[in-house]
Amino acid sequence: MKAIVIRERLILWHMSVTWEFVEMSLSYKLPNFAECWWDHWVMDVLVCNGVGIEVGIWMCRYLEVKEYKWLSVFDHPTFFGKLNRTILQFTPESWIRVEWNCFKSTRRYLEIHYLMIAFQLIDLNSFFLKRLLWVPTKHYMNACRLLLLCTLGLVVIRQYYVLISHPTYDRIGLHSWLFYLILITEMLVIFKLSKNEFTEPMPKDVRMGLWIGCSLYIIVSAAGLLYISACRCTSSSKNGGGDAGESKKAR
Image (spheres, rainbow, N blue to C red):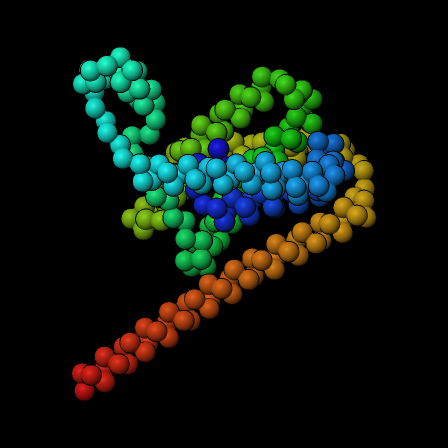
């Protein structure tokens, strides 16, 4: 689902890896996160998330180059043609190519990180709310919340992408405001109910893993900023060299 919505392999893999660090750092608070290392990195990252990411990206690439023929149902002479056209009514009318350009600028780089953090918080809230509100895993409220956020997220991602990609847009959409209000409200509920709830001290191995995860995140983020700075310097030097050559020709 996230692969079809976000459509960027680098962002999806980054979110998949960082989420496993989140699970490992909170395993002593949430029993659902207590898994073996191979379950975290092999089954979750490589098998489940990895296959989902690659299949979703392949589907997006296929829909980008697919030729759409939107004829009326009554224009098809056969029954199966009419049935196929009826089913296609529930598919996208068109499909645009999404390019987040994570390393375009420092601002764009930070905006992408903001998006990934928001996604991680939404996923994390679901586990904390189930624990603090004593909601069973198979309760219908979990499915309703997931359906609501997935439906709302389709519009929110589109609005956020347009906001950061097109300079003519300077306001965030109403669906995005609603999404942020839901996120903030859930976090306030968790903060209020978690008082005196999690009294277990952080184990030493979890603390060590948390430090390693935070250090890797900072190093990777800093490397991304350095890469952006290097690309900017290279572009500036090329433009400067081109301008100097044109000035010499003018002389």
